[in-house]
Length: 187
Image (cartoon, rainbow, N blue to C red; front, side, top):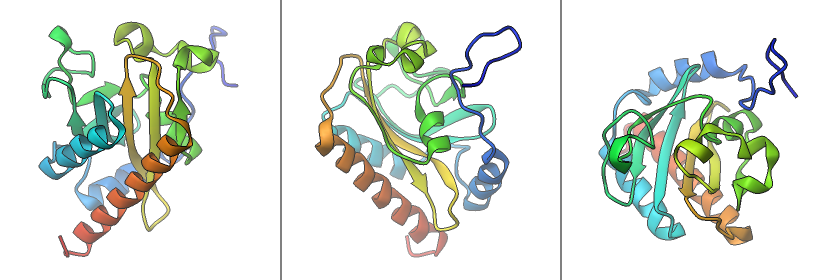
């Protein structure tokens, strides 16, 4: 485990690949502006999983950017998922949420109830936003770079199970194929 100088446990993993990821995202033209196709993908992801929130998330050294976002209200303004009046924004600090763990681990993560895991229960999104469950998978492109994630969250514990894990992994692979088609000029 990693600790900061004061002895407090750092909940967000060290990300050695961030500079490479940022270069690749810039090369692909991703991670800096909302994308209607990614919003549509997030909406479909929410429908498939019956989750209230779904994101296509690209991560740099300091923040997360939701290039695709679906919320129960359809609100996409503000500065974070828990923006004022319950609206959702496109940006979140890198130390909030669980996607940075997915990117560093390069593996899907299923948290049916985040409060069951001390490492994840202390994340700011639990108290500030009320997130109780998470399901996410990395977006690993043809260069081997983990660009970000696709994920869904809920404010209630969810029994995602094996079916949820397979669904999120399949959806991540589908989105990576879409990104490759864009890069190849076939979309």
